[in-house]
Image 1 (cartoon, rainbow, N blue to C red):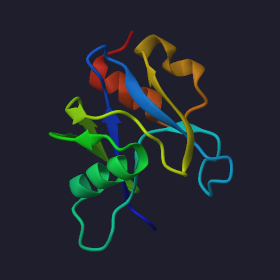
Image 2 (image 1 turned 180 degrees about the vertical axis):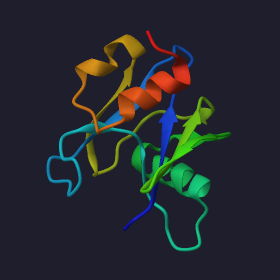
Image 3 (image 1 turned 90 degrees about the vertical axis):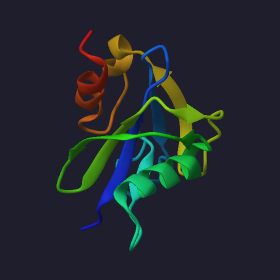
Length: 122
């Protein structure tokens, strides 16, 4: 089983960065999810999350905090980023989403609950 790392990137307006997965993705096609991906051999989970986020969005992530660990992923949180989102080939769209609008997106399971846990429930 592949273990991955993802980051909840939140801006100064409490909006979460979500990425729409490509329709031909093997896992969760066309769903909105978090930046992240597989941890490479010998790589630390935090480093993988930062690397994957840069590869997928060109955002440079600074300080991150571990939110939780599951059987399949390390989940981090950060408000410390620089740059402008430019998507890679794995995604077709991106949005900064306010907490009260997150339920209107067709999300990868668990994203809305994680978002609520880091910014509070609206």
